[in-house]
Structures are given as C-alpha cells and as structure tokens.
Length: 239
Image (cartoon, rainbow, N blue to C red; front, side, top):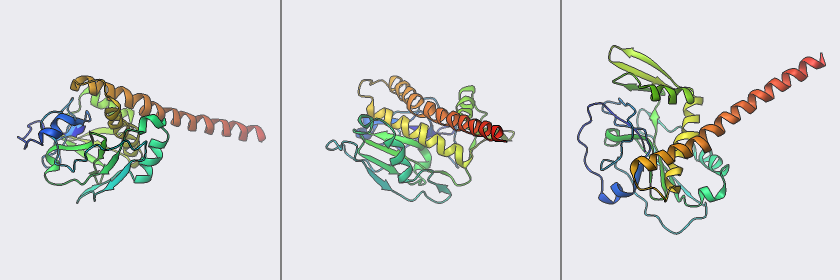
C-alpha cells in the first residue's frame, strides 16, 4: 500500500483480521491527520483504511471490473477508467489475468487516518484520490530516498515553514506516478504468490514497478525526445 502518515501516529482501529492477513500495503501510505502525510518505509500490518473488500472469485482472464466512488471534498482522482484499462492493456496478458477489480476509492474522514495512494487486497487494486491542488504537506523534511523518488516522477519538495514541507506535483507528474508506479506496484502484489514476508513482498512490488512502470515511462520520454530531435534535423536539412 502507498500510505501517507503523521510522525506521531494516532492509534487506529484495527481492520478485520481477514483484511489484515491478505491486504498488501503499497510502500507509501500516508496517515493524514489534518491532511499531513509523510512517506514511511513499509507501513503494513493490522491497521488498514476502512474499505469495501471484494472476495476473490473465479479467474476473470483479464476482464476486470472498475468500481467508482466520488473522490471526496477537497480531493480528486488522478486517473480515469480509460487510463487504467489502456495502461494495463500494454502489459502482457498473463500479468493482468489475476486482476478482478480496480476501485477508485473515496477519501473519507476515517480513511484520512490511514490515507493511501494505492492498496491491494486479494485480486483487487484500490486507487485513492489526492488533494485537489496537488500539494501534500509533511511535518518533517524528506529523507534522501523520498527526494529520489519524487525526482524520478517529476515532483518537487519545498519548505513551507520552519516545521512544514510540501511535496508539489504537476498534473503530468502525478498522472505518471499513478500510472507507472502506484498502479503497477499494486499489480505486482497481486502477482507475487511466492513471498509471504512483508519486506520481501515490498521488495518484489518495488522491482516490478520499476521494471514495468518507471522504466517504461522513461523509455517513452526518451523516444519522444529522440523523435523531436530527428524531426528538427530533417527540418534543418530541408532549408
């Protein structure tokens, strides 16, 4: 699960034991008391956001359903159903076959206590909304790995005050982050039937997202730059 969290974590109500044992938290969950989030390492365990849990059913052979909930006041969904379907259609079919449901979840008051970018449970991927202005507020300065990840996807950290930092996204960078990191990371959890330890599952999902998400995003950008360079050269030669 991709969580967002406060440094002084509040005691959260435990989720169902069933969910606890089967949900995989994207590495980045933010527990947002008053909307403040900070990246934490691998924040999984008994505390999960209240959700609609879908029992895994028959194999869908890649024909997954998409469920929609309103984003919630002050929040917005980053992707559309078309975005998700088109992105997953680019992957080999066997990667998508185990997926049964993708849900665009609503940000509620309770969920803000364990707010996520994304989460996997069983054969379902949950995608969560982000602040409408695409600015996240944190209590402490970012760690080196958090700066690296933000730079990878074009976001920037900036001080907001003496004890506040902001993570600022552009519409393009946050869309890239959800399409090529959050979504692919959660799919990696579904495909990981080998690992049981949290650290191993996160390590696999991270690797899967880099290989099938981030690297693809970078290759696409490089291809566009190469094409532009080629067009410019052709244009100059014609003069």
